[in-house]
Length: 105
Picture 1 (cartoon, rainbow, N blue to C red):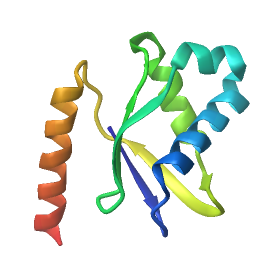
Picture 2 (picture 1 turned 135 degrees about the horizontal axis):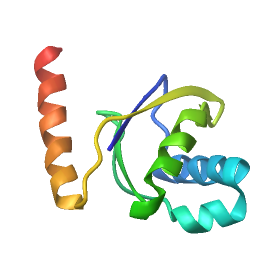
Picture 3 (picture 1 turned 90 degrees about the vertical axis):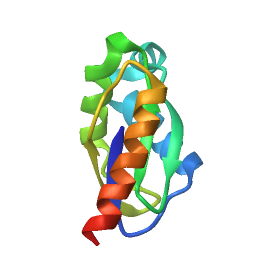
Picture 4 (picture 1 turned 180 degrees about the horizontal axis):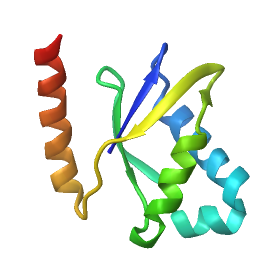
């Protein structure tokens, strides 16, 4: 689960495309094939996304997120919030995180 900070809300396609381009630039085609990144949940209002990857490539994904600096000409900062072995747990965490951020506002 990752949070991103940007002035505009990018589309899922723009996020996925930029993530794959970043992984390819840093780790090459082989790194992209080993990572198999896929955005499975995206909430543009809460600026939260769940990215699925192979378990043995988690550190590669985290490194790629550090280098993700721009999406469609907008500056972006991405923060890894949580990892889990199941999507069900992460989706529950997304709901909890959304509730906590709403309470703070």
